[in-house]
Image (cartoon, rainbow, N blue to C red; front, side):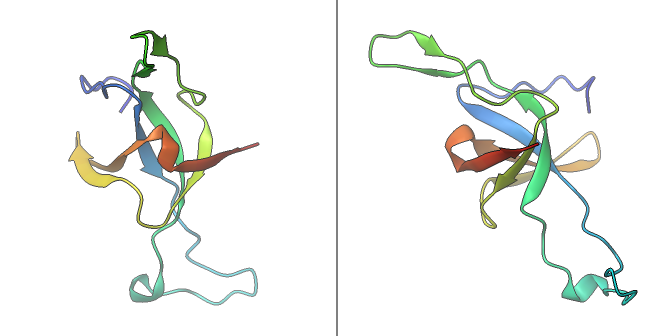
Length: 98
């Protein structure tokens, strides 16, 4: 994904979901049909930022490589270079992990 030619605009970011565990800590295997989509991911691309009321670009608080939490239904699902990704606004991100 790092060499893709896709560049998000404004305050949008591209996020790759972090895969959920296939087995619980107790050893129970979770079937694909019972898994929920994780609301955690890694930022793989960021836009330049949104413009304020004076036309100045305001940089984003997140950067490529950050692990983030976002809402369960946040973003638009896309497939780029064969990888399932989400494109969302920075405001849809609840926080950075770590």
